[in-house]
Image 1 (cartoon, rainbow, N blue to C red):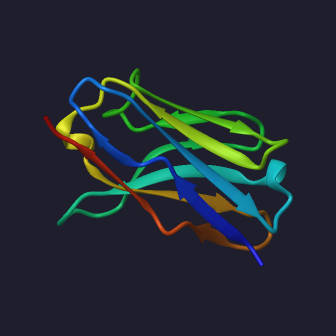
Image 2 (image 1 turned 90 degrees about the vertical axis):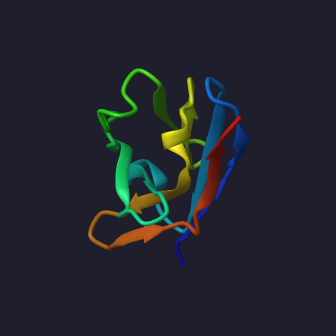
Length: 116
């Protein structure tokens, strides 16, 4: 059974930082493509950043230069370091594991609020 669990959300001030973490179990983690998505109230879910099993990264234009996605295959985790946060980064952030030859698996989401 595949489980995807996010942690690390919370409240930050504009210009501040947060680090999200996602742990995946039940898969051969190093083979997965991993991604972070977010959904703000009244908006569709959107890609924030993703990372292939080979280490290739991709970022939404709105977060380039501010957010960094990384993975630790030994710990089966993927992280999203978010710096210089803006109010428009407020959303529920979701982690997705794309498991080869199987399916996409989503976490339950973690809330990020950027407000002064």
